[in-house]
Image 1 (cartoon, rainbow, N blue to C red):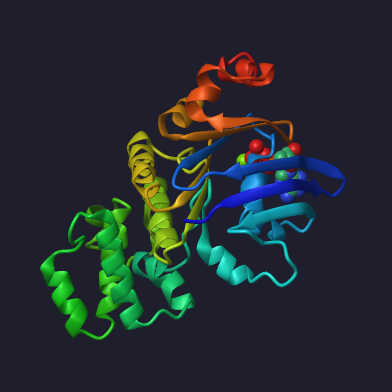
Image 2 (cartoon, rainbow, N blue to C red; image 1 turned 90 degrees about the vertical axis):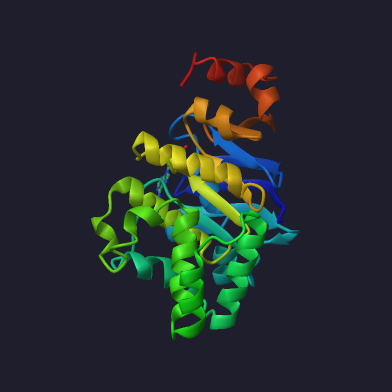
Length: 282
Ligand SMILES: Nc1ncnc2c1ncn2[C@@H]1O[C@H](COP(=O)(O)OP(=O)(O)O)[C@@H](O)[C@H]1O
Ligand SMILES: [Mg+2]
């Protein structure tokens, strides 16, 4: 599981500094939450971790982000490989303008995964979950015998993982844009997981959702942390308490405090953290 280290990370939009000199290690095999009031730089920090920040033309990044010791800002870094390894779930889901089915297969198709690689990936997915088989025997049989059957298997397995299968199994070829926002976000999760990333970045992924979808997503993250390094941005303190093992507190673009969630929430070292977790500042 990859280890992420930030070294003197600075992000500036034109002449406005959004993040100042952030140096911190993100522990693996845990959920790290990034908390802090709106505008303090949470999204900028998250997007710096897989270079999605490059898409904001005005943004300038200085410093280093090391993933397994390799600086992702090195001029020769492979950005396509990076974005596959480090998946991103945004605040609002943006389904691709295609069917539910094609949304899930999009990543594997783009990465030109072949039939055997897909069967292999599904076998590993099931092993990790130790739930036995995710899909019933009937899906499995047709997967092996029919052309394109591996994609059917992939779609069913990841939609089951994302808790969406039962709601969409009868309309897989309908446009994804017809789903509710909560369903779209679970589809986005299925799409992110389908390329088997090693790190998952999530930017307030439940903030636009109904409570039931939000709970499904939260529960799924509890499960995912066994396998992935997770960085989860939230401005909801109760959510950070529920799911976070480790906390990074940002305030006005600076890293104020970081540490195990228990310590940061119950005995913060910094006065600003204390005020924030007590609800005195927001
Ligand atoms: N694309 C952008 N162009 C200019 N300023 C931006 C851009 N994105 C974010 N900012 C500014 O950077 C600061 C941090 O924003 P952001 O990282 O989105 O914070 P948060 O996610 O905590 O709300 C804010 O002042 C915001 O206005
Ligand atoms: Mg944000």
